[in-house]
Length: 107
Image (cartoon, rainbow, N blue to C red; front, top):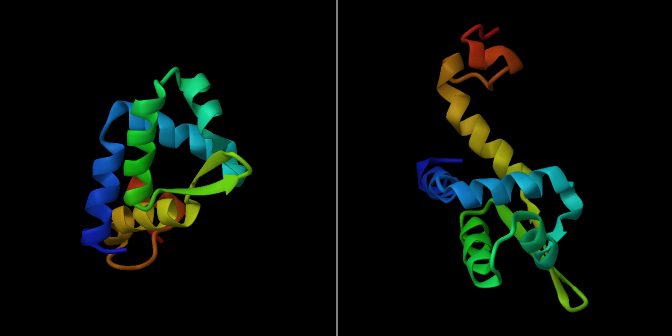
C-alpha cells in the first residue's frame, strides 16, 4: 500500500458512522452482512447506509456480492491489514511490523 490508497481508506474511516459500520463488518467476518442486517443493527436509514457502504467500497475496505436479491457486504481483511502495515511500516525502520511494534519495542 502507498499513500495514494491509504489516504482514501483513512478518509473513509474518519467518520463515526462509517467507522461503526466497518467495525460491524469486521465482527461479522468473511461471511459479511446483508444491507438489511446492517441497517437494523446500526439503525441507519437505507439511503444513508448505501452512501456509507459505497464510500467504504470505493476506498477498498469493503466488498459487496449479490446473494439472490440481497447485497452482502464484508470487510476486506487484506486491505485492512495492508493499511495497518502501511501505518506501522516506519516504526521498525522499514522492517515488517511485529506485534510489539506499536509499543516502540521492535525486534
